[in-house]
Image (cartoon, rainbow over all chains, first blue to last red; front, side, top):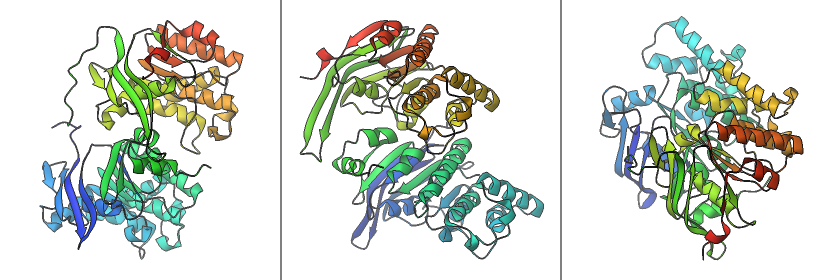
Length: 259
Length: 242
């Protein structure tokens, strides 16, 4: 098996909510270190797809296979829930749009980061504290606030904290749902550059869902465009954005307001 | 891996070869208007060659260059690139393979600088090197040398280029590509908004790249630059789709 084999393989993924279709027949491979952007308007099925792919919601049909570090490729929904949770805690990270979904608001910033380490068996307090400090520095947070509660932080800082909490266990795959929406534009640019730098230098594979084409142009190598639950176009990010083939992608790209 | 290694070969010395390339645009939201840019286009460029794309405005020179970079998606044909010891067809390669080719083999200078906001100029020029594993201190030194040669004052290196003049931005753009020795270079009017002195510097850089063996395809509106760097010319007027 080579390092270039896909990390994640999604096949024929469909999810229905009753008679409503969330996403329909989606297939893709994600390679190590590759960043996949998923764009589409609200209701296009992109968040449903992200939830299904990231082990948070079992799809109605289809398969999600993940290549582990140690035991080969596993069926994410074929394993026990305990094993899947372990995988999500160790090898994967999830950055939510709303930091409150991804952080524990009643414990300090440092504990939010340290907790993930304890979940994978780290017990040495000094080591945990050092790692937490190191990661808070890497996401450019003020170390003086390590003992503060996340609720006292700004939106941009909460997102940084979420990222530190996720990356501390050195995941191979991170899912992000609208990581920068809801933030001021000035904060967005810095956060995006930070994410880009960390993901690039650590070689982490990412799936990023967003409605913001600027975000995917900056972050993602590859792009999937969704409409009505289906993938209507996919390919190299700059190719899809600069030479869109599908009518919907053309509409999306031509609708960006000039600054 | 989903794609098999490309079995096609390139003759010795050929770095890039387009075969039967066709490009058209269908504007679905403007009544489905179809614009044919070129079709059945064959072209090759070898080591140490600088191929000039010629033809009037609208002949499709930039569209061709973008197709050769896989920034545009050709409707038919192939673009074979010599990448390390393999041959990659950019028209059928997976996105991660195309990015790998762009990282190490295929450089492109566009007419406009498009970069991440708020990143200092020096970091933009350093990054292509550090991504390839060059020691950060050495990368910084090489980036600085090149920026100085392109007459970007050192006082500006720590600033993002967004507020720079058009000519300065273009020189930053050139530095971001020329900081590494790409085997193949695609240049879209790299000297368009430069004064005489800087135009000469860029001309020298292009010629040095060619002499070290780079294969270059370029669009230059300036006749003097064309004469100084070009080894062969390719006229798109006749290749325009019927």
